[in-house]
Image 1 (cartoon, rainbow, N blue to C red):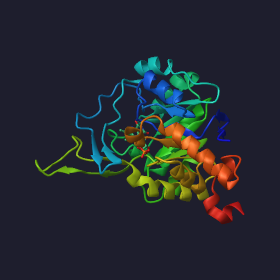
Image 2 (cartoon, rainbow, N blue to C red):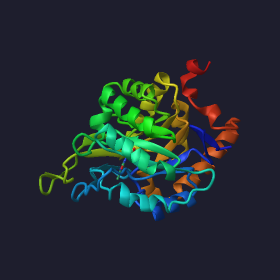
Image 3 (tube, protein in one colour):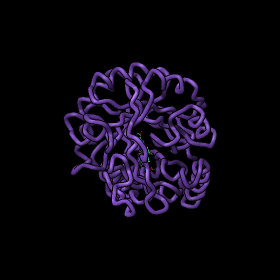
Image 4 (cartoon, rainbow, N blue to C red):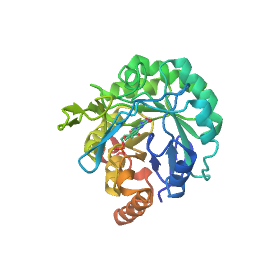
Length: 307
Ligand SMILES: Cc1cc2nc3c(=O)[nH]c(=O)nc-3n(C[C@H](O)[C@H](O)[C@H](O)COP(=O)(O)O)c2cc1C
């Protein structure tokens, strides 16, 4: 009932681990896969090692959202490959590598280096706290996004997903540019902002980078809106992410137009059981409403577009 085909890749369910949460090593990725996720996205990695920002890099906002500026720290592709090679998916689970860089050549190089070990590649062109020239600096510019996505797609034999930032005036324009460049799917959204939290005892921003991206429950309505708007603009599948913690959240994203979803911040409070619990809840909902597949539900909030 929950089976999902995403760009030709069969998934036992449409729930995936979002990039950057528990995705830095094979043991945590394997733990998520065993807990019932249909797929996992790795922590974003680059050609060369990047130490990221110094601590503090995350701070809680209320009980269910966080602000982070980790700065895309990672050991570089050569070291990260050792972990990727140890990830164990079954035939209906996907391993997705999240890559980033600043130049088209870096993306091509990363694609060529990892593609034989993964099922899909997600391009992080959307991080709001990346070092200069990376992340949202690309995804806020339709021409740059086009260049980077084209370079990755040309180099790739596996489906390429572009991950979008919500921190733009017109997300549909960026989405169309990525589709034109050959992206097979889009993930939306990366963290929102940047925002800031100030420690009032010392009168200073808490994060070492001062500002960071917002994630968790607080951003869900923005993510749902972005999926809804982009669904009307493109014809490639969408992966919704932002504040998902319950099956009801997943239904909202699917009705808005997502074919699959990713879950990040809520794992910190709910643990890895969140995948199985959401799966059970969604199956119950589908039975009650008379749906037999996820596909039947995609985009239903658009009434007109679906007739
Ligand atoms: C601590 C942390 C690290 C993250 N690292 C990455 C990353 O490396 N690459 C990326 O594309 N997104 C990264 N994200 C963004 C998430 O993948 C996701 O898009 C965002 O958090 C919204 O989903 P959520 O509310 O379910 O967490 C990170 C988010 C958090 C909270």
